[in-house]
Length: 220
Image (cartoon, rainbow, N blue to C red; front, side, top):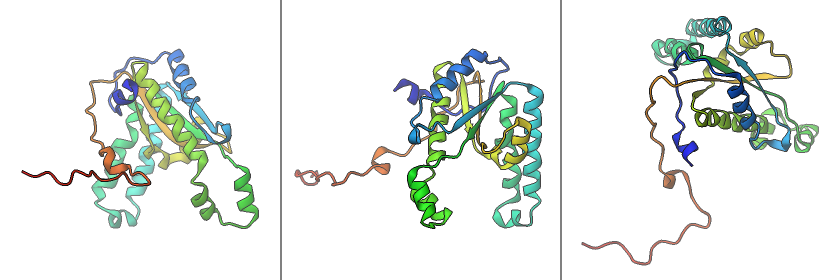
C-alpha cells in the first residue's frame, strides 16, 4: 500500500547516476506483471549515455517542429499548445536514465480465429482490446512503482513515441518489436505534489447495486 500510494510521476531529476544493478532490479520486478498468455511481450532498452539521450531528444524535437508546421496544427487547437509538446516530450533527456519499453506482437487462438473468420483488424482490436498493449502497460506500471520502492523517481511517457520511427533507429530496435513508451528515471529533484484522483464512488459501481439505507433521509 505504501509503495502504491507513495509513487508519483517525477519530471525533474538530480544528476546522480543510477547503478545498473538497480536498473536490473527494476526491470526484474516489472517482468512479474500480469500478462496475456504469459507471452511476456515486452523488452526494455536502458539508456544512460548522455550523447544518445541528447540525440533522442533532438529526434523528438524535430518531430514536434514538423507537426507544428502541419496545416492542421492550427485547427487542432492553439499553436502554442502544439509547440508546448516539446517540453513534456523531451525532459527524459535531463534524467540520468531513460528506459525504452518495447512491445512484441501477441496472438491468441481467439485472435487467429477472428482473423480466419474475416473480422477486420479494427473490430478485432475492439473485441480483444489489445492484450499486447495491456500486458506492456502492466509492466510499465510495475517498473515505475519499483523505481519508487528503490528510492528513485520515474515518469511514464507516451508523447515521445510520436517520433517512434527515428527513436527505434537510434535504439537499434528491430521488427517485430515496436516502441511503446519511454520511462525517465533518476533521483527526484524535490518532491512532486500528489495529483488529485477521482473518488472511488465515482469510478466504481456494483452489480447488483447496493441497497439504499432503510433509515431514510436525515432530518434536522
